[in-house]
Length: 438
Image 1 (cartoon, rainbow, N blue to C red):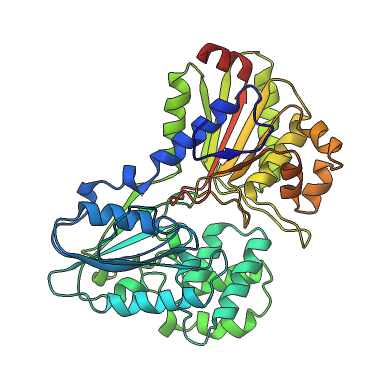
Image 2: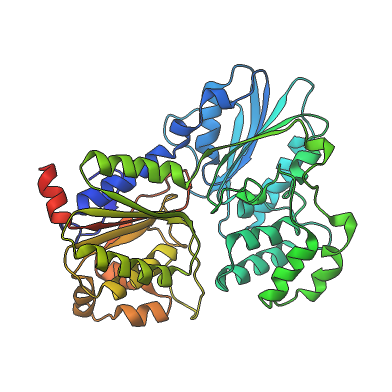
């Protein structure tokens, strides 16, 4: 088991090593040190700005590879800053709130806008963006307050809204998102380097696209608020429909010279895990890298596939990624997308032999807890009962963390400082897999 993955006491089962090493391999493949190549950077002097959970590690990679002078500022999540011995040069690293923006998020947003306007002649603005940027750098637009933005995003997340819809709303309530940061740097070229955490990998959705022209409109954002019956939306309607507050659009001449490159995606991580498994003789079936279903429902569907596949009694890996949704049905619970997926999977499997699974977020944080995810074993339902917990009850209360913690089946990595979203691996006939490895 990799040294930087800490697992619960019950992870000595057949298949545990393969699950954890495949996850470790996937995360490592999406790290900025591996995926941010020198050819991605423009030559000459750089003004480096950035936001996201990978921002600090991306800044280090850029500082190491740049050919000219480098100065700048990036914001990342608390605890996701520099590792020992890392050198960002003259790029300042700060930390702020996620998933809820705080006053430091607002200060970071203001600082990014201020610095964008200081681009010097001969400098290229390089913007580093990764998942989490939408919360980490906040700059409310017009009459919108930080509290309103925070409440709206929180409501949409708890209501199970698709992340692309959430980011559409964010873009139209922000003075920095939806291409507005790039507009602040004009005249001048902007190069955006992104690590994608959004299904479909639309660069305008990654961190809500601060440097990318916005294909959506304020009217679409209002329709999303109405569809989810968001409280207080009426007070925002006039601003959302006001052309003066509309974001820049694709085809805008000011963006013609810009370049955007996505340097890592869910596919990057899944390809690495696929290669790892295949090299060890495990056939891999890919179920999709951009799945956005409700988490526990997707778990049940994957359980059905796993049960059917297990009948052949042959080794097989079912691999998938994306960003599932959680509809919060109860208050006071603790969990995350991956724990809810695994709860649905465990219920659907019903203790079937020779099927184990891992689901975890590649950023190291599932939901708001300190865990990346967890694993499922054939004994999990009985283990929970011995601890006095029923998994169905905990799922109904959105309190799956308590169940997996009691079963000692959580997986903890700490911040990985990358983010290509969820990693899910179901391993069928793991005894045969690890017997072959030994």
